[in-house]
Length: 278
Ligand code: C2E
Ligand code: CA
Ligand code: CA
Ligand code: CA
Image (tube, rainbow, N blue to C red; front, side, top):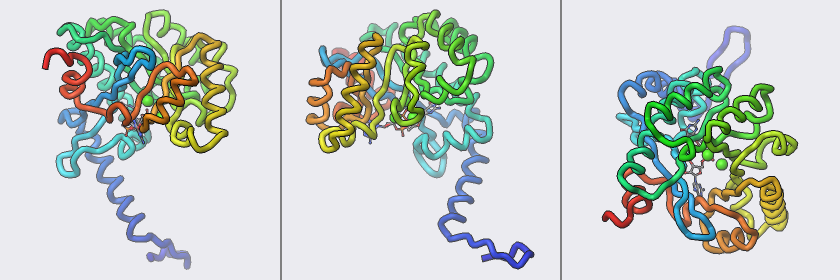
């Protein structure tokens, strides 16, 4: 405990102090991480429930920290959002994902869409549209092979979202609503925005067989999406029972540990994109 000089005491537990120190250190290290090329993308396959074929991969960032090892995004994305670095990191992610997918396509791999997570901050910068168009032009990736994952919050909170999403879609890029059902409860925007995919959050999938309410919600999301001409991707699918349930409900696409955890570019190419070339 330390005195703040006004007869009050601020108590830090060891662990919260450690957390603060670590955050401080990570934030300092984060500033150099892009230049030092310490970020890497892992890819998780998305499987079409009807054909069993891979139709897409979600790009998920990792930070190869020189001392702490491979860090998951939960350790640093919110920090990057706080200090503004997320804009540059996000640009790197889009470019890297497009370059990688273009390489796979050029090498005769299965045509897959690569999905990229957009942070709110990044989405709101005025140049999102030109950034995406420039990256597609530079890398030569067909717009149909890129999907941007945004959250309900981004779609709803800002008046200009409508225009941005519309223009992106007009250019051929796919739009996906991530973590659907966990944030805003208003679903009115679904009819205004032309969205391609809804991703059912893994918190619903987890209890799908045990909590009747979750099953009802998932069922309703799927009907709603289909009536609005959207496809449904279930994330966090870990068991064959969950998969069977989702298939019975006509869910279109599955992503989760049941098929595969996120893999390095080399691993996913070998197992999913060019399995014949082993
Ligand atoms: P998300 O977009 O909801 O991504 C899905 C997360 O669930 C990933 O965690 C993935 O590894 C994990 N996951 C996949 N299948 C399963 C499963 O069957 N069971 C369980 N329990 N989890 C599963 P990850 O890679 O740690 O990413 C966490 C979050 O970090 C992401 O959640 C996303 O919001 C954010 N993120 C990841 N990459 C990026 C990025 O490039 N940019 C931004 N802005 N955010 C990112
Ligand atoms: Ca996502
Ligand atoms: Ca999620
Ligand atoms: Ca998320």
